[in-house]
Structure formats: C-alpha cells, structure tokens
Length: 292
Length: 90
Image 1 (cartoon, rainbow over the protein chains, first blue to last red):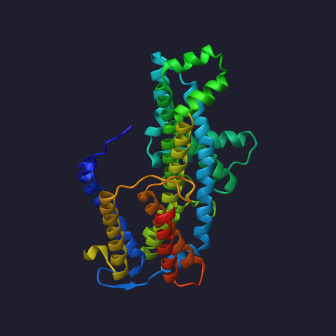
Image 2: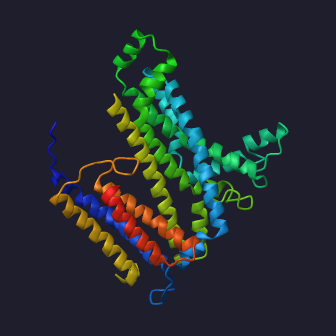
Image 3: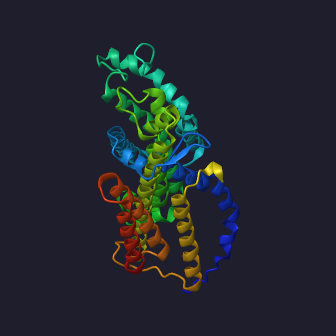
C-alpha cells in the first residue's frame, strides 16, 4: 500500500508550539541557565559550571530520596494496575447500576491533593480518626508519626485509594470499546473466562494501559502534596520523596542553583522512564501485529 | 533576555540543539527517513536515534561529572562519537 504523506498538516500545530514554548520550553531553558550559576540577585551572579551537578549527584539525602521514590512508584503501580483492571472487569455494563458505580468509583479522583492528605491525616489519628482509633482498639500500636512502616503503608493505601479509580476508569472505557462479536466468537470456541481475559480483553486494553501506566508513573514520581500533608516527610526522612526535597531546597532555602541542577536530573529520570515504557509497549504491539 | 540569566555555555548548548533540529528537518525534506533496524534492539527512524543519542549523552555527562574525576570534555567527545555511531548504524 502506498501512503501519501503530506507534512503540511504539521503547520497546524504551530499555535500549540508557541503556547508550549512559553509554558514549558522557555522556563526549562531558564532552569538550565540557573543550574550552572550561583544567582544572588538580578545583577550578581557567578558561573559555577558543573559544581551543582556534582554536589547534587553525590548528596546522600537526595540519593536515598531517589531510591524511596522508585520504591514508592513501583509499589503503587504494582498494586493499582492489577486492582484497576479487576475493578473495571467487575463494573456493571449497562443500566442505572453502571452509572451509579461509575460515579462512586470516580469520586476519589475529584478530591484535590491537599484535601486527600487532610482526610487521611484525620482518618489515621489515634484519638479521633476511624482507622487510627480502630487499629489501636484492635491492639496494633498504629502511629504514623513514629513508625516508618505505618507511615509508608498509609501513604501507599492513600495513593491506591486516590488513583486506582483512574486505571479502573481507563480500563472500563477500553473494555466497552470491544465489539460484542469477539465475545460471541469466544463463546462458540467455548473459551474459558481466563482465555477471554488473556486473549481478548487484555490485548484490547494495551492502549489504555500504556496511558494509565505512564500517567500513574509520572504522577506518583512527582507526588508532593499528599505525603507532605499526611506525614510531612517523616518520621525522620522516611517518607521524604524527591519533590519534597526539591521544594525544601528551592523555596525553603532559596538555593536556586542546586535546585535547578536537581530539577534537571529529576526531569531526565522521568523522561527516560516514560520513554522506555512507551517504546516497550508500542513495540510489543508492533510485534503482535507483525505476527498476526 | 536578562531574566533568563543566559551564560555563554548555555547559549552555545541551546544553539547547537536548535541547529540540530533545523538540520534534521532539512535532511528529512531532502531525503525522508526510512524506519530500519540497526544494532539497537528496536527499529528506529533517524529522529528516534537522535533522541536516544541526546538522552544518553545527558546521562553520560551526569555520570562522568558526578562520579568520575574526568573532565566534562571527555563526556562531550564521547557523546558526539556515540551520536554519530548511533545515527549511522543504530
């Protein structure tokens, strides 16, 4: 088949490009400029070269924040993706039940980050919070301000509660777009429930899962408000994630040079991981099409 | 442009990136890229290979600057070489 490519259509994205230039590209370039200088005020600045990068890459506090960040992102992805698919499979397909369940499932997504943090902060308090009080009554010494394990567990449950609905919603829409004929064919072949899931539903969900995994990875990797409100990064620094370290440095201490260098490293990590995810999944799809 | 606190190295850096993008566009118009498989595990277009080259160059620079006593110019030389190899045989 001969496809005719007309690249003139690219001109239509010029207005968007101009907008992105102002909202993303120019600020990013400014960050690069800051990362190689020590800026005191509008007139006083010194060129420092790679000094900030050396300092940031060798900072033990940041290195452990990075490891924590990866551990957190991987954990929530491993829980949220299977759970989201499961919920989507269980959701009713039509009638008023479908609408009702859809609204119920979506509710957590509508709550702002800060509010989610506050809700869980109160929920987990030992004296008035249902979960904190309940666990204590059951005999478990639950305390997120003292025990790192409790703090971690609570943040993960909070994130799962807040964001699994996104995956569920995406998968639900993916499932709805599968034509009925596929299921009929499966019934004729007497395919098991598992076979239907493995060979019809899961392949058809690939596209929405790519978006879901990417969004969830980027979101969770940049998580800030929820743990900040819930634990403030503590106990000690056991739940201090990257963005909180960055904020402390940039806003708290006004160290613009080091935080610019740190931001760029942070950005490169997100860029690499997102690109690897995207390429891996797109290639999986290509292989499938080639093989079929 | 004072608010963007430009320095000579960052100006050169961004000019080179911009020149690369313009160059790739011209090259694409003159001779459109064909997706192919080189030594990389995935099949790529010319633009993919440039992106991979630039991204790995960024990481190479960070590694050299952060964890070795070598000069950053070695990282730059290595990156340029790697980029050329990648564009040609990747």
